[in-house]
Image (cartoon, rainbow, N blue to C red; front, side, top):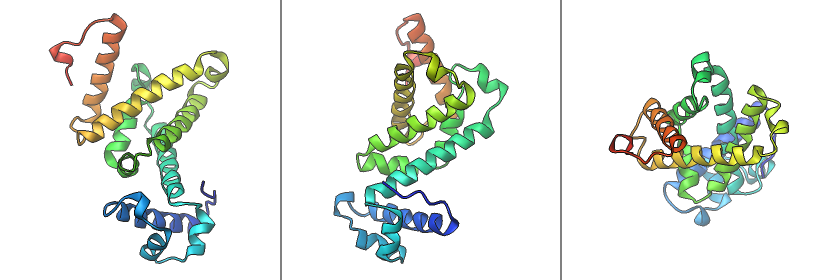
Amino acid sequence: MYHINEDQRSIHSKNMLYRALADKLREKDLSSITIKEVVSDAQMGRSTFYRNFHSLESVLLWKCDAAFDELYHYILRSFSPALVASKFPFALPFFRYWQADSEIIELLMQVNRVDIIISSFDNALKKLIKTFNPGMMDQSPHFEYFLAFRSGAMIRILFQWLNRSKDLSPEELCQLIEAQAEGIVRNAPLTSNDAF
């Protein structure tokens, strides 16, 4: 876990520690990196590390939570009537955001900590639903299934897209998602036009 402290000095320290850890992860596995190495590379003391984090994994958790919080605000700023009309209104800003900076997602995939991504995404998705449809969580007895379906699909598509070096634009990817959803609804098999 990490300590929630939002003063500018603390945020700066957290970012410096994250940057040092991210750089180390380009050289070696997470299990072989020590806190001592990270604080040394960040040019900070161990007390600064422990004032903000409990472990190296908590640095990654903090950065992922921060990225999904930024994504939440990005979606709020991007929202328009045209997006509301689409079947997946959050998809386009979702992929546009990660197109610009997917480093934390790629690092978490690299260290096999997709559980952190899923948890952060679920929290952001719940915030979005509370913002745009506040009664949905209370009114639907099957809300958790809805959340699992939407978040699972989006995260797996994100992983595939990153594994393919973002080979499609966010717009193309959203068109593909909508076409796939249409195929599922119609119960139609994929055609060569729907191929990935």
